[in-house]
Amino acid sequence: MIELTTFFAADERVQVYRPGVCAEQGRYVLYWMQRAQRGQENHALNVAIALGNALILPVIVVFVIAEYPAANLRHYHFMLEGLAQTARHLARRQTPLVIRRGEPARAIVTVAKELQAAAVISDEGELRTPLRWRQQVSEQLTVPFACVDADVVVPSKFFPKEEWAARTIRPKLQRLLPTYLQPIVDLETQHPLSSPPCDPGNVENPLNYLDDLQIDRSVSPSPIYHGGQDEGKRLLHRFMTERLTTYNVQRNLPEVAGTSELSAYLHFGQLSIQQMAWEIEQHVPEDTGSAQIDITGGRAAYLEELIVRRELAINFVRRNPNYDTLAGCPTWGQATLRKHQDDPRPWLYTRDELEQGRTHDELWNACQHEMLITGRMHGYIRMYWAKKILEWSASPDEAFKHAVYLNDKYELDGRDANGYTGIAWAIGGKHDRPWPPERPIFGTIRYMALSGMQRKMDTRLYIYQVNKLM
Ligand SMILES: Cc1cc2nc3c(=O)[nH]c(=O)nc-3n(C[C@H](O)[C@H](O)[C@H](O)COP(=O)(O)OP(=O)(O)OC[C@H]3O[C@@H](n4cnc5c(N)ncnc54)[C@H](O)[C@@H]3O)c2cc1C
Image 1 (tube, rainbow, N blue to C red):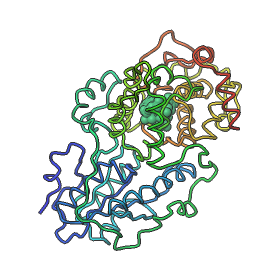
Image 2: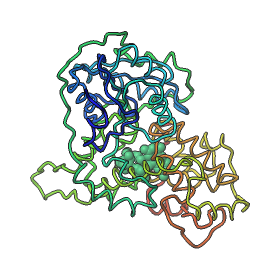
Image 3: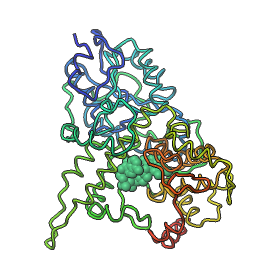
Image 4: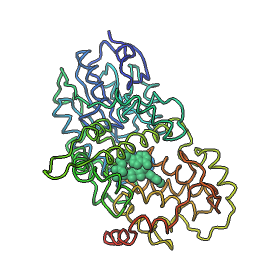
């Protein structure tokens, strides 16, 4: 007899949503894969396998393809490319994948009954919709259910309150990193299964599901980024060998390919953040025979973004229910914006004009077009992009809405804690401080000017590069 809470008591990543004894008549352990969309380096899958091994049962992985708010053809294409690879990786681990269509909670509860699951394990998510799904599954299942915080380095449970800024979460993370920044060892199932005892769905070619989805098809798949763990790992390797050394000096130059371009792979859980951070931490540059390469600065700067900034964003979204509106921003930020709400706007654009990149600012239009075409905008210019939306919108609330709409619609990594936090930072001063002197429209929210961008980066080269894509 295995009781879930007792069985996982020592694993800080596991949160038991529905406690109880695993069903004695159960025939499988079900892993509902939702956020951690990978067949390897997946702690949630390992937890399911550990439970299966203890119960002497095989594990079956279930993925439900649902219509997710604001996701469109671009996102589904990337996700399903990744799922095809996940199916192959799982087959190698003799842990079969079953794909279902429809409303996730209902689908999971139905499959659990159909397959006589002894227990259901899932991964963890911080956004509103996936959290609601988990809540519904927990209420409707009749067997125990637990979720595993598999897409952060340090489990989120250690940050039960909303953190004020990077400087407040950083020391707490640093204290816990020696315990949690460890490589992931894939667990072997002791009860292999080559195929599930039910219709597996189209695991051979998940992209076929695209035809059946009720989604916005106006945003085409990215011509540059392709989904899947193998592709993510290829880009990670490229980053470590070609860009990590200079990351600290080049990361704010959008005209230079200096960052990792991995946020979409992290968003869809195709890469494990924990494994990735471990590999960066352990990376030793190849001996080139010439002067020794120093990666200390690049590595520290990268781990700051990858762990501190990303886990701060996850903390914000998890602990603040207003994460995607101005109401989630600090009081001082909201107050200063309200004070300047009626300031005249020298430039005012509709959402359509912004969406099509038709403003007076050539640099802004270029970054908007980069996002429209490729599904990605460089991180440095994203800050400028959002601040100009504030400057050119009728109100800060409208600016916030426009930024969320455009970011979620076109960015491959959109609909993510990082996105809501980045917008809240740029527009509402989240995790920032007041920046006097007070200015029109912005009040004391940090301002970014075109002239500043022209000083810091080669804007002409960047615009030329984007124009070449069009
Ligand atoms: C207005 C605005 C909107 C943003 N929207 C998104 C979004 O929708 N999705 C998204 O993932 N990121 C978003 N960011 C954060 C950041 O710009 C991107 O994560 C980064 O540009 C992704 O490119 P990269 O993988 O090459 O980053 P790298 O510079 O290589 O960084 C490595 C990883 O660290 C994390 N990271 C980097 N910068 C940040 C940051 N500022 N906050 C939190 N995590 C960070 C990301 O996971 C990223 O993949 C936004 C930032 C702003 C200012």
